[in-house]
Image 1 (cartoon, rainbow, N blue to C red):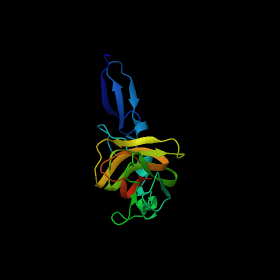
Image 2: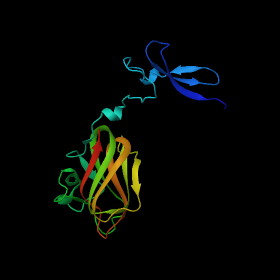
Image 3: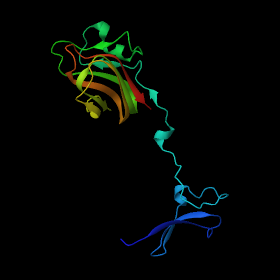
Amino acid sequence: NGTNYVFFSSTTAGGYQLYLGDASTGQRWSLSQFGVNNDTTKAKLGSNYYAGTTAAATQQTVLLSQGKPASASSSYSSSLGPAYAFDGNTTSTRWDSIEGVAGTQWLMVDLGSTRTINGVDLYWDAGAKVYSIQTSNDGVNWTNIYSTSNGVAYGHVALANLKGSGRYVRMYGTQRATQWGYSLDEMQVWGY
């Protein structure tokens, strides 16, 4: 729009202060609101960065799901129930859904309160080709925070950088990747 902006420093306000100026009109704006002029002992002869913090930056990501109440759409047997997918054992215990016409099945954990979710680790014994990771605050209305139609038959899948929140988190499988039912040695939900 015909304006020319420049960064410049000035001692007009006392000490070196950094400004943004419009060279065409002479209007200037102090960058103090972004924290760039906080150190009055050093000359600010160039642009700086805003070192503010965000809530996410101050939170420590932790494992939220281990030992929490779990449920599932089905279980192959009582020794392969949903709680075994949240017991901390990634190799020797597991949840299995029914086999045969397993179709759509889900495994859910109750985190006890609404939490921010930023990662899920799935340790598949028998995987899902098509599935979603979903969150909910009430266990009724669900939001997808991850979905794929190219899931693995078995092995560890780490889903990082997820963005979601909820009290309940579930794996919602709609197509199996094997002839067996869905089976997870462990499902770990990470966040804060």
